[in-house]
Image (cartoon, rainbow, N blue to C red):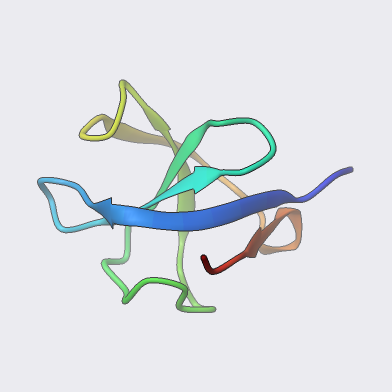
Length: 68
């Protein structure tokens, strides 16, 4: 499986770090409120846009952080 390449794009209204996937354009967020690019982040796909709700979790082996 191809990894999601996640780039930090800001914080949503709940102070969750939000990432955009370079491969798919999907949005993801860290529900543990860690600093951007934290390797202990609990990443979920977002449903409903930038301020949308976290949906299902993503396995740590399936994504990689990239910096601008």
